[in-house]
Length: 339
Ligand code: NAD
Ligand code: WQD
Image (cartoon, rainbow, N blue to C red; front, side):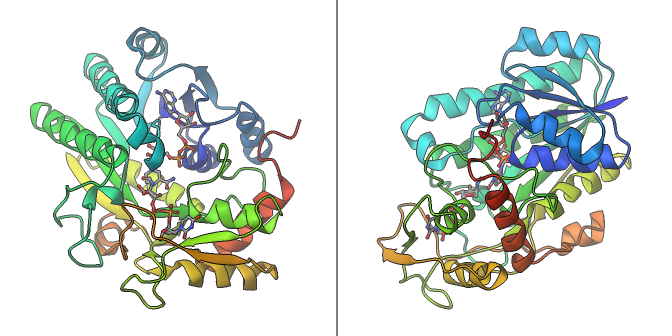
């Protein structure tokens, strides 16, 4: 019996695969390398001394996925595969819909045929749209997504809810991630964005390594502690462990369940910059710019449901994450592309 991990060579997927292997699970990864590199597989082996099975395939390709489901004995699926760039989704909404919703439909169909009833899905705090209040609770209103990427996550959540209603035997954990940052403590795996990073932490680390002259801080007139945007930054190693907690929960056959995975604490852009400077003793020059369209003042998670029902509690704080992100970036100045 193995866990099928789609998107398992990506940022969050690779950290989760490491935790799964370290905890004795057998893992089968499916990834098309649209946003990751084969080198990740060697790094996973170096860290864990175990090699997961790997298939290079597109999860939205029904025939390719059907072959994998025929060959393998799959106990549960963790579905990370998806495109995640907000900006790109605005330019290419159909691509995002086909890839993200399309791959989820293929998985559900094959899970139905092969009677695989356990699924963990990577959703996002983006489904809450513009928050009415913080902290955000799982039963708060969703919708009003400000971009097609976010809309695909919400569409998939609805698809999963309908699937669960039609299949009472299905157990599905929807995990709404807040803002993952950090890297594995080994410095061997981490976030490796293509081109100019969209997200804050990889931008900071690229400034630190000298690839970019300064950080652009998108707005200083938000209704927050210092005027810059506030988010809930969760260490990716903690986030990975949340998936193992969710798999355990599914053994109790709970039907469909939804959990926020965050720390419950908000941090502003400037607070994160200062934490990075302190943790690593590196100055991060920054320039205050216009707001980025679609950004919100603040969001952070209400985390008591995940704690009470999954036993999930974060171990690492933003200083740990800043230190680990920098270890990854400084050991791998060009990400996985150094060979
Ligand atoms: P990532 O891009 O690093 O990983 C996604 C992986 O999926 C990549 O390896 C990519 O090659 C693969 N992939 C994409 N489409 C595929 C397809 N059709 N078939 C096969 N492989 C495919 O992203 P990540 O940060 O690790 O995010 C993982 C999941 O979590 C995504 O679904 C993302 O939307 C979601 N999420 C991420 C964040 C974040 O800030 N990183 C926040 C909330 C939710
Ligand atoms: C964080 C803060 C920016 C970059 C996005 C997606 C969300 C989820 C996580 C997948 C904001 C500010 C950023 C920079 C900056 N992904 N910032 N300069 O926007 O909270 O969430 O990633 O599901 O769906 O929308 O994360 O890291 O882009 O931004 O000032 O160069 O940093 O304005 O306040 P965000 P982020």
